Structure formats: C-alpha cells, structure tokens
Image 1 (tube, rainbow, N blue to C red):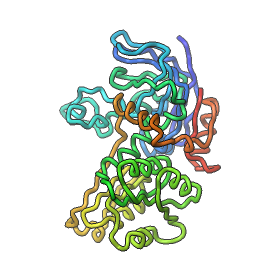
Image 2 (image 1 turned 60 degrees about the vertical axis):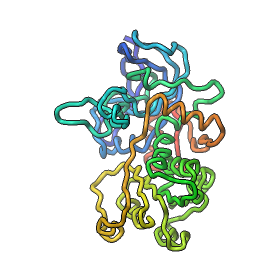
Image 3 (image 1 turned 120 degrees about the horizontal axis):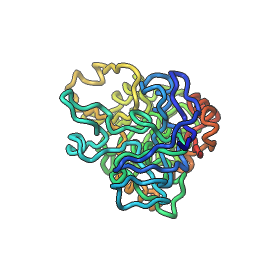
Image 4 (image 1 turned 180 degrees about the vertical axis):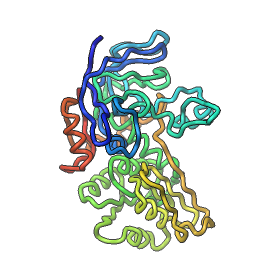
Length: 357
C-alpha cells in the first residue's frame, strides 16, 4: 500500500509527523493531493488536550489541492482539477442540513444530533495536514479553484474566512452599524473584514499586539483599541459617545473577552460569539440586565459546503478582500512540529503558516 506523511495526534502535547496509508475514496468521495494547508487555533486546542480527538488521527481542516482520485459515483469533477473543500463537509441530507444548518450535520439517532457534527476533518476523520486527504460527499463539498487565484489567495476560505464572515452575518450587521471585534487573530481579522463588507461604517478592532492592530486596519477596522493601554470597555463606550455598539464579535474564546463584548452592547445589541471556549462561561448579571435587555447572544460554527466556498472565492476574485498578508510564515510539511511550536506560542509575529507537502 502506498504511504504518505501526515501530522498525527499522539496525546495531549504531542502532534508528530509520521507515515500513514494513502486513503482510498468511497463511492461518493474524492482523494485530493494537498498542495497547501495551514494550522488553525482549533488545532492548538487539540494539541493542548482542550478538545478531545482520537489518538492516531491526522489533524487539519483547511485543504487546497488537486484531485488525485474520484469515487465511482462522483460526477462533475475530474482528476487533476484544482479544488478546495471547506473545514465543514456536510452530507446535505441530515436533519440539520435539511433545517438549513449544514455545519451541525451528523448522524441522526434516537439520542439526537451531535454538536459540530459537520466538522469531520481532523475531528472525526483524518484531516489534511498530510500529503493526501479523503473528502467525504465530494459533490457537496469540493469546489473548483479559479485558474487566476493562487493557493495562498484561497487558503483562508475553508475555515477562518468562512468563520469570520459568518460571525458578521450571524450578528445581523446592517448598513451604518458600529461593530467591535474582540481579538484580532486570524478569525477576528476576517470578522473585521466581513463586518466592513456587510455594511458596518465603524469597525473597532481590539487586541493587545501592535502588529495585529495594524493588520486589523488593513483588513477593514476604522478604529483600534489596545487593551494593554487601558480598559477596552471604557475605550469603546467613549468612542461611541456612551451609546455602545450594535454588534460585538468575540473571536478568542475567553471569559474576559466574552464579558467585555457583552458590556459594550447598546440596548438590543447582539453578541456574536466565534471563540472556542475551554471552560464554562459565566454571564454577569449587570451587563445581561437580568435577561431584560433585548440583547441576543448567537454562536457560529464555520459554514462549509461547495456553494459557501464558491461565494468566498468570488469575494476574493472581485478584489474586495485580500487575505494574503495574513500568511506570515511558510514551512514544509516536514517541519510541521516546528510550525505547531511557532503557531501555538505565537512567536515571531505569526498569524497564519502556509504548509506545503
């Protein structure tokens, strides 16, 4: 059997490069040869043991590649075609999909559905930090990459662009809104860009790293707040003349950023939560106004599927957004352990690492 290199979860604290068998496609699947992938903050949660996955699983959920082999029942694609697949790979026929929430796809059983069931790569099946990856339900999930777009131009589409934009969409941003985005890591930066595209006229980016605040301005933030220089809640209330923001997007996954996002909302405002939380959250009574403030708290898992990927690539092709500056480092798959160390410890101004097998 042909072998390939893959980044494999061994135990909390250890993801190592090892060999695995090259996957075969089922009738509805495709195998793609990965040409570029990257590391996500969720992968770091897996590395730290904060999100449980099976030992021996290949990690990664952001693939760009070329179709190497098609399942017998797959039509509309050809081997050798450049494609991407979203981090979320819905089947299209589960109860969640038929309700319009494809990200929550999963087997329907008498025990109900599993949250985040549409996230399979690097979660419930082998992921794409490898030389090859099997894409389930290929006709629902593969999307051709336009010839004029490079791998790095579309690398953010499978996850962080889709997630960040969806945080803006879930927040119901309208033309003329003021939006605060807490944390300007990769997803927060995409949320800032998405908020601007959705019609917000004032986007406030919050972070404590000067380089990320500078990138936030490049991605669409009109104002920035450095939380190391003072209370960000006070700063935002001052910038909005005490009104608060229409939408606050939380893009880190901590109690402090969640609570700050809640505190800066105007009456009837929306908190759009994108962070992956590692512990229970507490909702403070005051900012929650005892449940009487007409506020909304909404959560979002990265939308996936073929049509979502097509739309995101159209945004890139139109020139409305350029996410290439977010790729700050480029490493080979052979150096994946070094890449994890760099990314997990946020060294050398890292935002995203492009990994090429």
